[in-house]
Structures are given as structure tokens and as C-alpha cells.
Image (tube, rainbow, N blue to C red; front, side, top):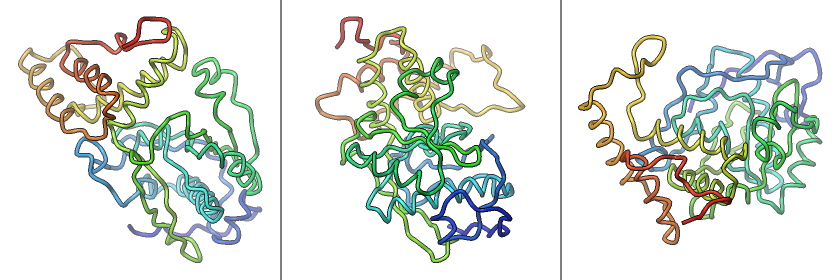
Length: 302
């Protein structure tokens, strides 16, 4: 992967002391969002479920200096955590983007082993990230998704660290990905973890089944589950500025279902004792079930 172009030396102190010692490329732009109309391709981790050695981070909007600044800050933080023996796992929008969901990356979400979370939070603060409370509007929209995480901010860029138990991935469900941080001085190889479509979908359903139907967290997880399966199993391409719904013929629908089922049955990573999750999702893909039919804590479960 090509190295990122170096940025100009900032006129003010960079937000991370780790950045200062390993890179002179941070800038003081307060940009708080990374947007992407066309996410980087990571099909090797989507329906085909083969591993990838590249992170999509350095491929996003290379023409935008503010975006590169945000990526550099986050990558420097990850590099620093790695020196402390803390390997993060992609989560939230970062993970969805890797799995070909065209999301806007406003926050950088990562999972950290529960027993290392406090150490990771302390190190993050040492690098100049301030600990912040989640805004009331996000608490109202997403509930426990916001309260379970530890939130940090640097120049308007938010990094959220979740306890790994929140996702519940097993070690054999994670893939090691080496990030190319050659743009740092000196170069530091850094490792993060990611996962595939099936383990992520199962994690969503596992959590969904423990939540009451009207809970805000359930709505958030259902939304992300729909996105992951839709963009990995169906043809979501369209011409023009937006997708026109309601113009499909029955032949188009049948073709989409056949495509979706074929790709779904190639997914790997379902747990032997949770095949009911695969069965329930296959029924949804087949059009014989609905996402609202997935179990909840206040209804009879599987």
C-alpha cells in the first residue's frame, strides 16, 4: 500500500504526544467527520470471506488533507497502543466500511479486551485525547451503544473504545490485519483485528435476542445488520443520484433472492451451537422471514 503524503508541520502542538515523537504530519484542522460516497473495496472480507492484508483507512479521500490528518492521528494512536501490547479490533462504522457498507465515518470505533480497556483509555488520554460524555442526542438515539463505550475527542475527532465482550467475538472469529504505517517516522508495523460477515451478523443477532423489542440499542443493531447483509448479498448498485424503489419486476426480485441465497450459503464462521441464527437469517434472505421476527428478551426466544 502506498504511503500517505506527508503533511506540513503544524503551527500548534499536535493532539498526541505519540504523534509528535513518531510523526511530524499532524495538522490542527478541527474536522470531525470522514465521509465517503464510495467506500474502499474490501470484498475479500465480505461475501467471499477470504482474508485481506490491507486496511481501507489510507485509501479514503487521499485528496483531503483534513481526512489524512484524522487517519494519521488515529493510526498513531493505534501504533502507540500496540507498543503497550494492546491490539484493537475494528468495530462500528470502521468495520462496516471494511465489509463494503458505504457508511460515513464520523467516529472511529474499536473493541479492546475487557481487561485492557482501562489501560487503553489511560494511554489514549496521555496522547492528548480528552475523555468526553456522549451527547444526549446520541444517548437518546442509540442507548446502551453509547453508554457501554468510553469516548475520547481530539480536535473534534472522536474515538470510541468498546469492551470486547460487547461484541462477543471468539479468537477464531478474528482476522489479523497488518496496517501499513510506513508514512510514520520511523516506520512502525501495526496489527489490528477484524472479522467476517457471518461472525458480525451472529454478534448482532446474539445481542438483539437479549434486548426488548422497543429498546433503542436493538434498533441500532438491526439497522447495521440489515446494512451488512444487504451490501454483501444483494446488488445495491444504481444509476443516477439515488436508488429508485418499486420498479423491480418479479423476475428481478427472484434473481436478487437467488443471488443472495447463493452468497449467504458461502459465508463461513457460524458457530455450531448457533446455527439457528444462520437459519433465521437465511429465511430472511429468502423472503420467508423478517428482521422483526428475530427473537427479543421480551418474547419467546429460539
